[in-house]
Length: 182
Image (cartoon, one colour):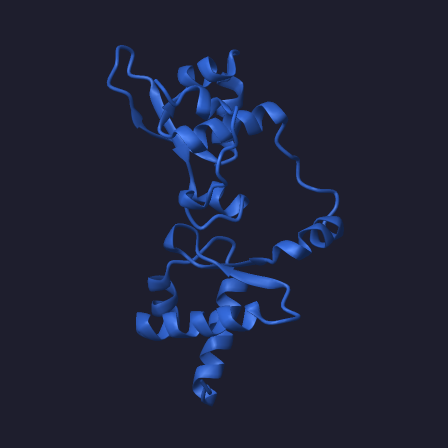
């Protein structure tokens, strides 16, 4: 579909907002900022998405948690990481293990994470929470009422996921498989 001059201008404005935003934006916020109805914003987002799918584009449109952001396309991630060196501090294998348990088993308590891992995880859970990758989502209705943890929108952003349904499937022999019969 051919876009008129106004649509092209508004698509550029939309793209600039997405590029400048430090966090994903709700379509409603984009609609308000641009003075367009949400249907028109969605149409323009679809046009951007089509443009980004084309050859030569280094970015893509991502929709974590129903919000919208632009991100580097996967095939350019290594180039960008090299460009931005020194890289951000990465999570240790133990922290990644705890994060994976939380992502696949949420909501889950810290003692349940400890049980799956076979070692204490309090410091890992605190670090993951401090980094905004997990958050308390309530309390379990058992004696002591331990906190329940789940992943956050930042987790989705960090791992390039739109929602938890896009987590990769678990392979055989993982802790998830071992606990599946419980």
